[in-house]
Amino acid sequence: MSKKIFSGVQPTGNLHLGNYLGAIKNFVELSNDKENECIFCVVDLHAITVRQDKDQLKNNIRETAATFIASGINPSKSIIFNQSKVHAHAEGSWILSCMSPMGWLNRMTQFKEKAGKDKEKASVGLYIYPILMASDILLYDATHVPVGDDQKQHLELTRDIAQKFNKDFNCEDFLKPPEPLIKKNFSRIMSLKDGSKKMSKSDPSDLSRINLTDTKDQIINKIKRAKTDTFPIPNEVQKLKDRPEAENLLGIYSSISNQSLTKTLDEFGGKNFSDLKNQLAETLLSKISPISDEIKKLINDHDYLDKILLEGADKAEVIAGKKIREMKKIIGF
Image (cartoon, rainbow, N blue to C red; front, side, top):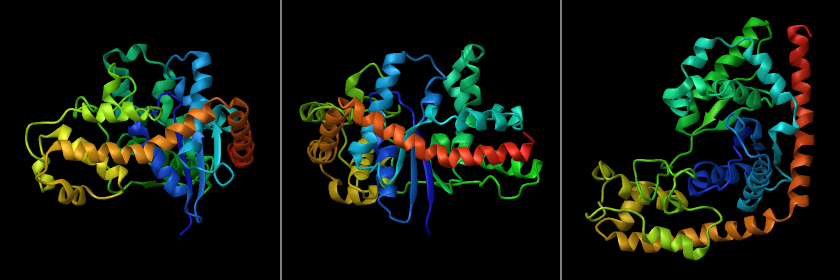
């Protein structure tokens, strides 16, 4: 069955292996399916929920687009654009925020995690971020949205908002509640220095992550120095309990190799971590280095990237603009 897929990536800069395995690799696979219609958005409106340097933001938008293309997303087959170029996203977000109960937003755990103890100082944008996300998705009548564990709750909110709008304005099926696309055989990618923490660009140690722009030598060095434990690699998944660093390296190898963790344990069970690290480094070099080389080439071609984003925005505007005009009629504008 054909799917209409929408997904977005924040232009935070310095995209890493966690971003690639958690999202972008999946985007490429989905876009390669001829039956799928894919829309990939650089969600720059979401990025400004926290303060951004304007020049760095411009660079990060281009870098994210470059990463999409370098990873294998064909801009002539899929729409690639940045959110702020399509006014319907912000308009839709305002309309949907006016009929979304605060109680729903108060249940969003990600705001509590990101705002921390000092939530009174967090921006209103960070608080209503999930409604903008709902607008992003619903404007395109997306049938499916690739999500990780941290976005499942937001997608459920999107479904609730769609159903409430349809009921409130007696317009059955106008906003389409999307289905989640949960990636199989995927392990959450954690820090190479601490298996209990998510791989993140904000970690002060560059050794904690594989950046998509890392050189071959940097990748080899980081894998060699990745934290492990003193026990051999087990043969069974349940024996990885309370061994976060071991589970992380095995999970990375499984994800990059497109195989189950069970199969990886069959391959490395009983062996030393040096065997796993050597094979993991080799596999990462074959998969990530070509992407890294292409990103570095594309990132300097501002005219090309800006052209791709502008053409994508024009295509997105046709779809989202029509939907927002229909939405305005329904509510009485």
